[in-house]
Length: 640
View 1 (cartoon, rainbow, N blue to C red):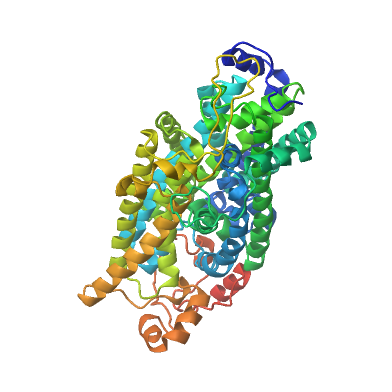
View 2 (cartoon, one colour):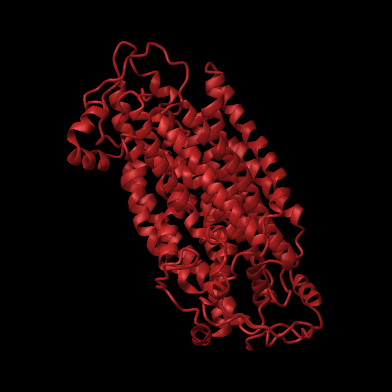
């Protein structure tokens, strides 16, 4: 098969109409079956499950979820349709350097298991931001909670609109209709079936997602041949894995991919309400460990398959770049174009790909809806109306799912102006989730951080990250940032006579030639988008520690001793070895017991109402025991 397999036609629009015509009833049937199954899971857990229907079950699955559904849900909750459409494009345009991000998954998984998850788990959180009130104060919790609610509402619109637009371009599937269908299905099964429905649909959708991209890769390699693909990649200089360029502007280098990628995925898996909910939903740390291992393997496979897709796409269109040939309106549409090009003559197979993209969007939205229900119920409703009954909270959580979904659908019309969705999504994560990861890290790693420093630090980091993120987006839209795409050509666009013959420079760093004399501001906002989450997280740590020291020096810090269960065990050991006297001053003693409360009208996510009823009002709660990791053991101790 020739490197330019486009059918002989006269215009790009005619070609697109030919490809759209291949999307027929078998594809719609596959798409419909996936939606029906997803809705059916919600119906089962909403109406036929024998489990008690209460808020704890609706938001946390009773905290007895097994490893497999949680692990698969972790994979597809934030490895969304943006990843499936965006990652192949990153490889197509910029080469194989991005693939080494899978190396960063190893230290990320260790950090989750040894630093972050144990703290989330033993506090029995429902809202992740309760940790911030326990560790600092309510204003810190409120600020981070509000910003992350806004992030979730807008992010859900972005992960649905971008893929729907891409599919519309090459399949003809109406954009607003597909967006509406996804939101309606997600709202339905999330509000009816709750957390268990979300997790089990996520598990199914993760499998469909991985299978769909694997089918595309297998068919592409079968058509083009592995040796042919590899030779074209080598000729173009795209095969490079260890580019040690120290320039912070370089889109993909060892530094940006490994360090930036580590903070990017640590932010997603360690600093988001949806995933923290998943850790807290499991019964013990042994199950959590199993889930993290499964998540690591599945995440690595997914990123690898997406990268391979990008390489195959390049080999397919090596002499006729679809972007320059005006076959697509945005780079995110390249993968759907490629799918219709190679699978369009096989009824049903394009439908599997569309189902995979749809599943990725469904999982992200359903996870976001359930997370918003947990945040709003725990952070606001329980504080405003502490005497709410379990039934009332349960109904409110369902209503929040519906209202949040409608709001997010409204934001779709704002997402239209975001451009290419992959860097836009990463920029959004960096601006909002990077500082969030930073405040969680500040809380559980640095015992001398205080509430004044935490609040000032996270606000300063949000502002700083937003300035660089928005500045980069504005200057990119204005064409003031360098185009770092590697060699692309339209020299052999068969049947497209109106396409001008053009080729990008072959050197990967040729973009630097025209930007060495640019202003300091342009140099600053040209920073690789992969660094944005790192900048947000480190900004919170630096600002937070600085303002904490200032608050201590001027005497306005009045925080009580730090609770030991809020600090990561490994850092309690580490800091105690280095600064034993300071740690003794900062931390509660190991045998410290919280003052007895004779009444506690509601839970704030720390303990379920059933557990609270078993605790004697005349006995103090048990001291914190870092080795007590199983919820059944915890319950037994509480019952004493």
